[in-house]
Length: 289
Image (tube, rainbow, N blue to C red; front, side, top):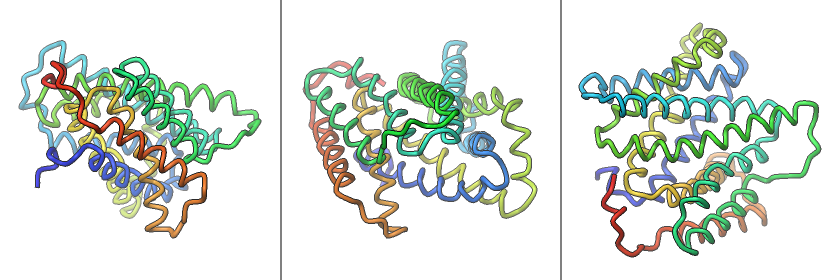
């Protein structure tokens, strides 16, 4: 069965499960390097894997497509590293919900009709409930955390819009490979040195490869497939499946049964997905990308 033939919600669910499995492996690396350095190393290793897989040297690049890929890679890396850095100052639930403002903005600006706008409102409410957001005055680093997480949200919005443009090139994974290399190189002077201890042992190096494949290679490759098929607003709404994936991983692997508000959040996200997944009237845009 070809992956590109699977329904978009199922692809997102697979992507989310892979991401959170990778995150579970990454936790064990935080004693060896900082969260930001682990995030950069994940991007760098994923770039190597994608270069071997996508073989970008076999693609004929124009200046326009080359610049688009490089910009996409820098935005992708910024999205990851600012989110990791924000987690040092903000609770995970708050960070997850606030970063989702990026996709919300994309859906609000590019959505067509009442259905998609209602869907994104339901998805936002569902993500907030699933993330378990609590009101907290925060500490001295709260302002820094807010700046970082809003930067991550803006980068996520850029990732959706630029990712659709890159995926529309229809050249397999070569654009993604080039983008990941660009993102890794731009941030190498800042985060690269701190990642060197991860290569000091066989166990940490293998764990890093597992994190890169599960949290970057598979999810971003799936995103490229889905972005060719959906409008930015539809893609943004389906991103709400990611916290649902985390919930399912917690139930199956950790026995963490959701409480009342999480169940309400799950229902809201499912309704949002159902709204955006209903067949829309044929439009010229459906033939694009």
